[in-house]
Amino acid sequence: MSFSLTQPIVFEPIFKERVWGGRRLEAIFGKQLPPGQRIGESWEIVDRPEAQSIVRQGPLAGRSLHQLWMEERDPIFGVGLPDAPRFPILAKLLDASDKLSLQVHPPAEIAESLGGEAKSELWYFATADPGAEICAGLRPGVNRSRFEEAVQRGDVAELVHRIGVRTGDSFFVPSGRLHGIDGGNVIVEIQQNSDTTYRVFDWNRKDEKGRERALHVKESMQSIRFDDFTPQCLKPEGEELLRSPHFVVEKWELLEKRRARVSSAFALFVCLSGALRCGGMNLGPGAFFLVPACLEGAQLEPRAPSTSLLRITL
Image 1 (cartoon, rainbow, N blue to C red):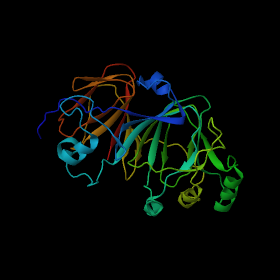
Image 2 (image 1 turned 120 degrees about the horizontal axis):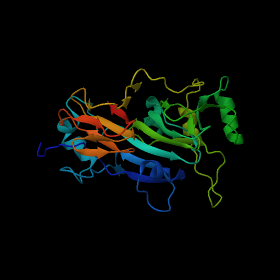
Image 3 (image 1 turned 45 degrees about the vertical axis):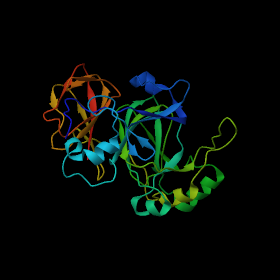
Image 4 (image 1 turned 90 degrees about the vertical axis):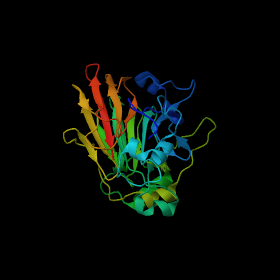
């Protein structure tokens, strides 16, 4: 290791314009969005061929997440992690100012045959407007043929299960679960490193030129789990929101100084509210930061009341 780290690693965000996006990542989290664009996603931690997180500052400034994963795996991420070709987590912020399409990510057992990648994801609702909802799974009694007929008619609203959500809720979307997000939600999304999404229905929406977005009905019908009825928001067990084969997500209320890592591996954090200090670095709402394995004894110190975090590990 030819460098010495005294602070967490912070990356530059990558902003994605979306038809359903808005400007609330600027208002809520202080993100410096490009002017005039409807930003739906801020990719905060990503290691993909088409998108790379770049270290913002410090001795690793300018290096990509992929370079760190391939060249500095043990000191940055820890010993004994999965030998994946890329960093296995993608973390982002979503601003759903309008509703997203009804969509699905392919299950692992068929993803490759469809030319895609499996993707399970967790949503944490950083802000949910009064009355905000999501779609997830199906209503009881809906089967494949009934759903396919409704898609062809352009009318599936009565077949999907709807869930009211509030700020602070969390929800798990395993591969194969039909889902959609209504407007009025700002979400922290923690997911497998994948960008495969099949749109089965886009609410008959058209752009300013009268064109509909492309759908992937054939792939969607092969991917949707038609035995997935009426899922609900997660019920946390203590601090733990989710323990899955892909990642573990906890929510910490930072009331006093606390050790960032409880094992020899890295830990990824998202500041939800308040403010904190780690290794001499001040971090506020919307900050994603990686505490590397080599940063022994790193402490998180609250610097404002009601400081809360998400903590993500493998």
